[in-house]
Length: 559
Ligand code: FBP
Image (cartoon, rainbow, N blue to C red; front, top):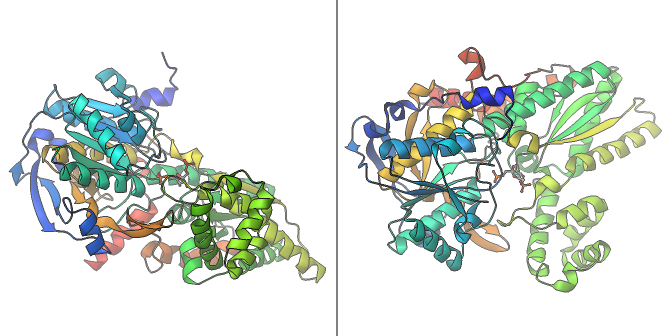
């Protein structure tokens, strides 16, 4: 018997709110189809690669249209990629819809991510098991993994597992890379006329799986609220002790949605936005000069303390670094197959790399401290991404700011004290107990995924919209996965992938930040959001991110 905290016990009893039409029960859901769709970019290549699932129409569920056929359906579910708060509720929503439709339906959970379906490792869910995970954080209900489903052999194994369990549909809960897997699997299964459907669910704390149809990925709400609580606490500590500069790296991979949301919630002195760095072609030196300038100005005002937020993926957006990393990725794609290189010492590896890099890139690589060089050489993840969570950009910036300050001191231009603390917030937020918003949204996403299965759809992403309204006004439906795809270079080759949504510099969220950052830099405008509230008035407990509110306000004005 597991031990549960008092909050955990209370959360198990929370009844998540279902989106509009879904709240009437799975038997009341009716379906209508919109226009056919095209890929967001590289249409011809995507059409060719996904011939059987390309261009399908957008699906809406409402109370008029065609009735869903309540046929018997067994389903398998996979949690894929990094953890995000609410994953357990997606499974609970899927399970409840499936059992309401027909108690004989079965839901299987594949263990440890996509490898679970390949290796046939699974559990069958029942009421007792599901009930002990409702509204809880984490992915421990079945575990997760980052295996990339892409080879013929993996697809054959997947089909074998599905056939052995009489599975009609697979639900993949994941981010952009995992839903790319979902689309590849949907295409393969359809081309083989297996009749097995694949539905994705938009997960990631990074917030970069969003587009004209998907308003937010689940987990972003809870994770950013958790980081905001922590950053607010640090701001209060900084403002109390008045002796430290805190450099806080925030998870979020390439995009700075997490950093921007946390900045709007907590109003720190400095927030770097990777997308702006790239657009303005800011060099590493100019970024360090900007930070140094704020440190000096604050020090001149008697404030030798402050808080700076650093996006996890910053290093990949600094133009000279980006060019160097792209060159490095191509070189590593070859070298990682060379056992002499793999077994060489770090010093020998750096020498080999420097010889192989173009000369400008070699000097950028050479200018980095060994710690960062070693972190840049670490294995890419199975999808070919640099593991930015392992690159200590916050420490790199601290060292470079210190060097600047030393120089300024020697020149008599700075007379302050700089004492630093480095932090990295990422894993602290990924498994937090889902906020009411994420608990409701995730439950709806899972429930809705089963409606898509009953509708006979495949190659779709479960979609719930209108999310700044109360849940009874949320709209349910599905978006074809091919609509979000384009071609990108991974492991040195062009591959189809779901396009990541980066921060839009002309969008309302960045504009709000831009209008305030100067004021926040020099004054102490810190906001302390405190812990996530699960019980109490709806305007405190159910409200979602500032990002989504600003985006929807802008969308409403544009309409
Ligand atoms: P997903 O894209 O799979 O949702 O993962 C997001 C993330 O949390 C990133 O923010 C972070 O860079 C990465 O996972 C860390 O990966 P790992 O869990 O393998 O350390």
